[in-house]
Picture 1 (cartoon, rainbow, N blue to C red):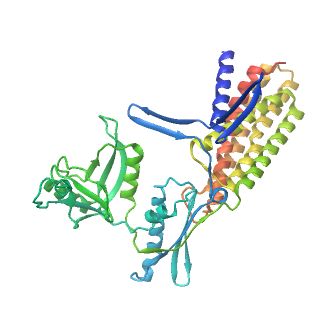
Picture 2 (picture 1 turned 60 degrees about the vertical axis):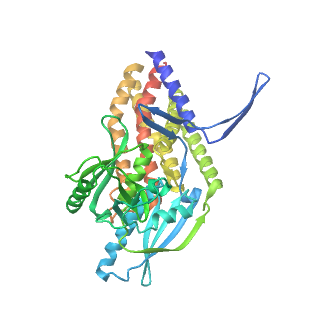
Length: 449
C-alpha cells in the first residue's frame, strides 16, 4: 500500500508539472555529452469519446490589466422612451450585451453603464479580444431574431443555380421575443448535440401554425438579415417545445443557442469610441509578481524548516504540491488572472501553511505527553481539524462576500475585487486539501522517529 502511494504522488506531481508548464518553454540542456534542445508546451486534450469531442488547452488567461484587449463605448438612443423607462432599458441593454460576450468565451469582462450629461453610455472591456470589428458586430447589433417561411419562386430554367437555392419570406410572425429559452441538449439515441427551444404562450400558438403549414419544409431562423440555420420541420409541434438537430459540434450548438438567446436590444445603440489597448501592467509586472510569489514561498518554507525540522520539510513538499495544484485549477477552469487575482494567490501561499502549523503544534503537544509517533499524528490531525475548518470557513465567507456571485448592490461589484476573491477562495480550498490530506499521507509515508 505504501508503494502505491509513492506511485500515486509521483504521477500526480508529473501531471501537475505538465499542466503548469509555461507556453513554448524551451528546454536546452546537456546530458552525458548529448544536447537536448526542444520546446515544451502544457498538456492539451483533443479527442472524441463516443462521438463527443473533448478539447481542452491548459493555458493561463490574463485579464485586461495584464494582457490588454478591446475597449468599446456605445451610446444609447433613449429619445423614444419615457424618462421612467430609461433605467430599465439601460439595464436590459447591459444584460443583453453581457450575454453576447459569452459568445467570445471572455472571462472577467467589464460592462458598466455611465451617464454623461443627458447621454447614457455602455462601456465594454474585453480582455484578450483584439478583433475589435468582430466584437462590434456581435455586441452592437440590434439583433432582430425571427423565423421565416420558405418562399416558393417560379424559376423558368430549373437547371440554374437559382432553382436550387432556398429563399425565405422577409415577413415573419414569430419573433425572438416569442422564444423563452434556447439550451444545448443531447439526443438520447445518438448522443449528438442539439438545440432545444421553448416558446412563450403566444409563440407556442404561432409556432404550432407555422410547423403545421410547413411540414417537411425548412424554416429559416434569422438574426437581423443573417441566417443562423434552416431546420426542416419533421412534424407539427403543438406544445411549444422543439429541437434543432443537425451535424453540430457541441461548440456550434452552444453558439447557436447563445445567438438565439441574445435577444433584441430594447434601444438602438451606436459605437462612439473604440480602441485596442495594450496591457497596463504587462509582462514586467507579471514577472515581478512571480518573483514576489517565489520569495513568499521560500520565506514560508524556511520558517517551517527552522521551526519544525523534518516535519517542516514534509510541509514544504505539500506546499509545492499546493502551488502546482492551484495553478492547474486556474487553467482547468479558465480562471482569468488579473493583478489583484495574483495578489490573492500570493496571499493564499502564506495562509496555506496555517493548517500545517496547527497540526504540527498539536503533534508536538501529543509527543510531549509521551505518546508514540503514530498516535501523536493521529490525535494531532484529529484535534486540529476543528480549528482548521473554522479558520478556512471564515476566510471563504469573506471571499464569498467580495466575489458577490448574486450581484447584490450592497456588496462590491468590481471585477478586480472579484478576481482577488476568486483566487483567494481557490487557494484556501486547495490549502485545506493539501494540508489535511496530502501532508498527512506524506507524514505516514516518509516521517520516521
